[in-house]
Image 1 (spheres, rainbow, N blue to C red):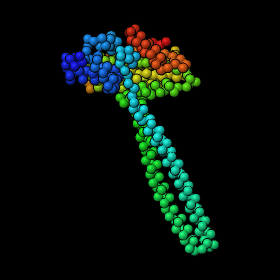
Image 2: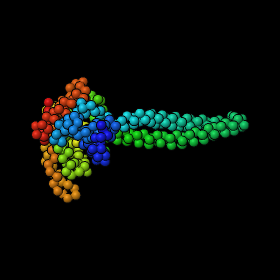
Image 3: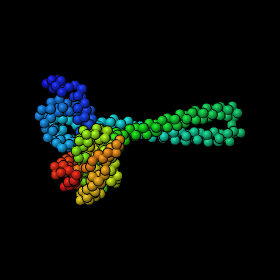
Image 4: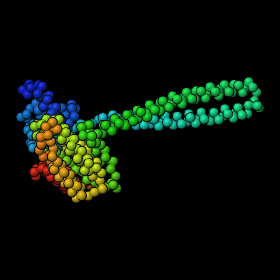
Length: 330
C-alpha cells in the first residue's frame, strides 16, 4: 500500500515534501517522525492526512499531543543524555587530577625540605651513607618533578576536555538557528524549579500563519523571521526563560510574577512584534506584518509540565481561533 502511494506521489517529490513537513512541525528526522510524516504525505486522502489538515488549518503547527493522538511518537533529543554521562566522568577525573597534582607537589616540597635537613646534619653522618642518601633523594626529586610535569599536562588536557564537553552539553540544550535554549532545557528548568521561587507561569507563543511566509518567500526568509522574533522575545522577557520549543513555537517560563502580570507583559511583547516592520534583506521590500498568538497559564503547585503545557497550548489554540495576534490567559 505504501509503495503504491509513494509511486503516485513521486519519489523525489515525496522526500522533499516529507522534509518540509518535518521542518514545519519542528520534528527531527527520527525514524518514528519520518514514518508519521510518510503516512501524512504519501496518502493525502487517508484519515491521518485529513485529520492533520483539519488541525493545521490556518498554518497552525501540530503539537506533541496532536501527533501522539494520531498514533505518532515524538522523540526527545538524546544528545544531552549522551553528553551528560561523560561530562560527569570528566568533571570527576579533572578534580582527581588536580588533587593528585597538589599532593605530588606537596610531597616533592616535603622531600626537598628533608634533603636540606639531611645536608644540614651531614657532619654527623658517615660519608658513604650520606652519598647514598643524596643519590636516592636526588633520584626521587627528579622523578617527582617529571611526574609533576606529566600531571600538569594531564590536568590541562582534562580541563580542556571538560570545557569542550561543557560546550557540547550547552549546545545540546540550545537551538542552533535562534540561539535560544531548546525544549530539553525548558523541561529541565521546569522540573528543577523551586516552588519557593514562584509563582510560575508558562506561556506558549506561536508565529501566526508562518507557513505562508515559508511558502511565499522560502525557508531562508522564514528562518530570518524566526530569529528576529526569537531575539525580540528574549530581549523583552530577559529575566525569564525563553526557548524555541519547536518549529515556529516558543515557550516562556515566568517566575516570580502573577498570571495577570505575565499576561500583561506578553501583551506588550505581542504589540511590539506586531509593530515591527519586517523587510526582505535582498530588496528592502516590506514583508508584511508579523504577529504572534499566545496562551499563558499559571503553574499549579506540584503540577507536571505536560499538564501545564497542554493547558497553555489549548489557550494558544483559543487565541488562534479568536482571530490571532492576541494573548489568552487562564
